[in-house]
Amino acid sequence: MADGFETGVDVDDEPSLRFEHTPTSDQSFENALAKARSGDRLTVDDAIELFTTGSESEGIDRQRKEQVLEAADRRRAEVVGEEVTFVANLNNNVTTACDVGCLFCNFKDAAQRFESDYEGENDGFTKTPAESRDIVDGALDMGIYEVCSVSGLHPAFALDDEHREILESLDDAEVQYTPPEEYDADPGTYVEQIEAMNVDDIHVHSVTPEEAYHARRGTDWEYEEVYRRLREAGLDSVPGTAAEILVPEVREAICPGKVGTEEWLTAMEGAANAGLDLTATIMYGHVENAAHRAMHLERVRELQDRTNAITEFVPLSFIHPETPLYRQGLVEGGASDDEDELMIAVSRLFLDNIEHIQSSWVKYGDEQGLKMLNCGADDFMGTILSEEITKRAGGDYGEIRTFEEYVEMIESIGRVPVERSTDYRKRRRLDGDDDPLGPLLGPRADGTPMLDRPKTPRPAADD
Image (cartoon, rainbow, N blue to C red; front, side, top):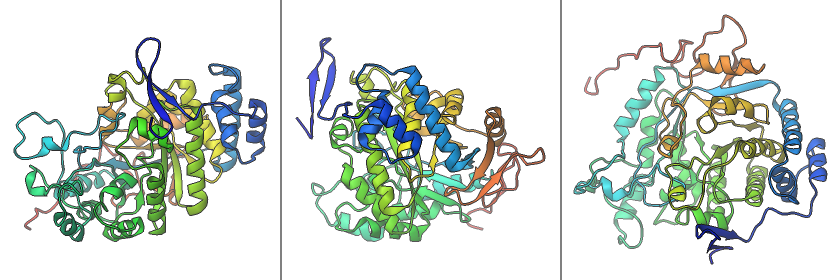
């Protein structure tokens, strides 16, 4: 037994989990739907009823589901109108080296495999700050506005030079740290990576609460101090990933080595106090149930009540084929289409203090991703240019989305395509025949389609 759950065995002798929190409530579906339609602030019990379309019976009632989706789509129109936004961005994940051992992840590689004397195979990667800078520099020539960077917890990573001195003074048993000279590639420090990616005032979206925890290990530094140093290095906003499900009994089941619920929330508040914008996520469709999803939404909403720093909420449907959860028989698959649609819809209805809900084409694909835009979502993610995390977990969808594709898809459902900045404060509608089908908001953007623009030659490093 650990934090309210226990591992059991079901009738087919397959591994199973028994949780304290179950998807039942004292509320009725009809009352919860009425509150959602009227705009009243929903409770956890309300959300459970909407997620399950009535917790008194098994399975999802399709007619009731459509009522929830209709209410959410109406709310979306009231809050943000008919625009569908997207950002020109690049994913530059620095390293796959990580020893946390999350059961839902196939992105990581054991950090030992990166050591210089390791003799086995290693399909992972670690980028130096100089390599990260070159990648971002090249993508800027394609017109991107944002670089998003989420990485494994490399044992050689330190926040900055001061942090490295502290780590080197500690015994190995006290903290997870191995000097960078033990590895084939040196990731540098978090500050060096942020400084390297901060080219031409590009928006740098990086350093999750999990990474911030790694960047303060062995110290008593507050998260606000960690994020303040990163902001001074060029960090602009913080991705609210590593949230997974913000309920301890679920985290104990899927990521026992990861930061806990309260630690995640504390880190996010620290980032907000340092003056950084935040995003928030949920990773659902694995071992959790509707009660856990509702509790997660409540914690995100309460965080936004305290900070008013969250610019968007991003539901991430669990991709299962290449993950330990699937290989160990703890899950048979991911969320169904019905569950995906209700996740978007209930997020819109419950999170009354977060304006933007994102539909991820990387997780859902094009057809279902568009459907989510009629279930309460109003943002359609970004151009990406690369996407290693979902791909390594077994995802089937692409690694790039062009502006031409965005415009065609968004207009096909009668909505207005809008290029946006990461924080949504800059917006450019693409609703005219003469609008260039390329980005205009990025530091080097000029409207040229991303795949048509030639890379600008750069001077050699010693020039």
